Amino acid sequence: MIEITSRDNPLLKSIRRLAQDPSAYRKQGKVWLEGDHLCRAARDKGVKPLQVVLTQGLWESAPLVWGGVCEHVFVVPDTLFATLSNLDSPAQMGFVLDCMQEPQMLPKMPTVVLDRVQDAGNVGAILRCASAFGFKQVLAMKGTAALWSAKVLRAGMGAHFGMNLLEGVAKDWLSHLDMPLITTSSHHGPFLHQLVAERALPSVCAWVMGHEGQGVSEEIMALAQLQVRIAQPGGEESLNVASAAAICLYASACSGPDFDL
Image (cartoon, rainbow, N blue to C red; front, side, top):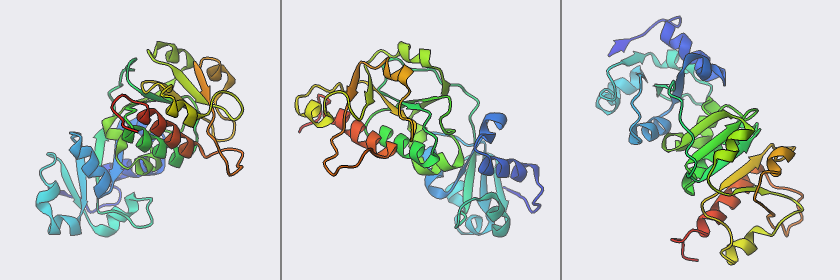
């Protein structure tokens, strides 16, 4: 255990940048996880942190819980730890993770494609839904919110650590997916609930979720093997993209051979 008491310690300065700048992890090759829930989710998936940072209060009350997670454990005063946080109620601990390794696209893995989804909360919520419904690969196209930013990590609630996540994906990558590409549309295609009832919706597929205002781009829409509509009997013009993703991914899960309607 190493104590840190200076606000200007190089490790703490690095963590502040990671916490405050959504794209800093791309420059540093590191990710900052703040809070017990995210850190436990990472640990339970076998992720080994580079460093563990704890408040003095947490270290004194539960040194055995986190002290053996890795070789480099740093303890800072509670008030100093608060300067690392963007949360209204700062946590008492965090992990610094290595994110230098570039994952490879898996052509046969059920996938969600994010086409310029810009809101970090939406991106995190979609990752959480994707993981819950068995879509373990997410391809984030250029213009999508940074997948490993602090806000997306918090919204994802730990989903990141069991998934294959790729950023900066170009349109031509989609041709390498060995499965149907499906998009939603307000005016074209069959209704989603009808496809589920008829067992006509592929359970292994790639769902494309588009920009909050513009939707899926015309270029990617042209690549889709299927366009579907979500019935909205209440009369709203459209759904939030994270809500639409939850409905679509659940529908695909219901269409799987092991799901009993």
